[in-house]
Length: 531
Image 1 (cartoon, rainbow, N blue to C red):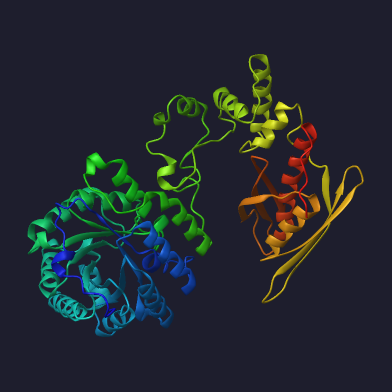
Image 2: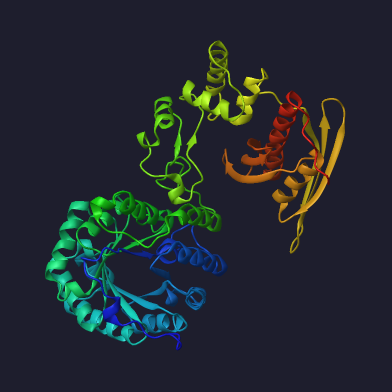
């Protein structure tokens, strides 16, 4: 522990169920990071840890120091860096694990060691080969050892929800007697139901000795899709710490999603009567950072932070939203860090949303004119998943929204230099015979080709979103690049498909350049930038 900081008093760290504060214990960097596909290097872990501290998590489980030298180093770096969040390290009820956790946390301003052991009959027999008495003895010994190495100790009963309730009480009592101030009941395999969780935590609070002097915690997995519901049931029964992860990442089907738990407690505050210290406006940025660091996107329909969480396409919903936001939204997108609600124009949209969007773009068709635009819009919407502003402007101006050109790519070269920047050159040919070239360097081949196409087209675009996904299988799979750029007070979207992802990016960018060019020719000329 940092010698300059005073150890936290066990009494001051304790909280009864009557407390209105639910502690958020984030295990994104431990339970979440150990899941397949979510591994992060030390630099990424530190960046995520700093974001989680800014988010306001109370306890951050930084890793399992005994697992590997790199995990140890990551925990030590995070412990040295964070200032307000308690940094936690995981350890089995084994002396080497606990000592390793203590060394990793030496520089932490607020340190917690999290010791655990399996308690269910299945785990005792087949995983540990230990009797009940041996589990109890190991618990007491481990907690006592950990108490001498950090500010506070948490004890977890692995597979607690499949453990005999009477034995769980015995183990928890041993942990409390040894000095543990937080008791965590794990639904390790996501087996339980909210009713069972409510019953268990009620039972624990009634029978664990000194229950009013410890914090009860829930750690739920999502194998049956009930991790968040089970966590909230535990809160209703008096749990005052929830263990969770950003985007719900974790072993198998994942953990309880931090953003869902926090917003449920906030939106339904009169029902739960508790609150967290989370700055909810940082939820979406934290989610996006995690996707950037791991390369794993969240599903569009993911609650709170998914792309569709505050998007509406159905005409009935859009009409209701235009009348009163509360008809179809129970929280503000700004409350979770999303800029605004989106009324997505697609085949299910109605006239009200179309008129509203056209007015925002500066067009005011009404009566027969709106009917004509609406008819063309519906035809296009049957062919496209989503209608963008450029499509609407083309319809309003009597243009073909599916038109291509006037520019096409006649030559594209890109190169990546090991240990240095990438470069790209592109030649565009206009339908009137004009040729133009662009050459640029970038942080990578995609960045370089985007810069090159800006130079060739003489337009300065702000690229705001870039997604790549495979649309076929095999080593020669086609990749689809989707780009969004901000230019001239509008957002412009384009996509391109190729077996070469750099070429797919260039094609997507060209779609945007051509749309801007066609709209510019229909209005006053758009000023070129100085290069």
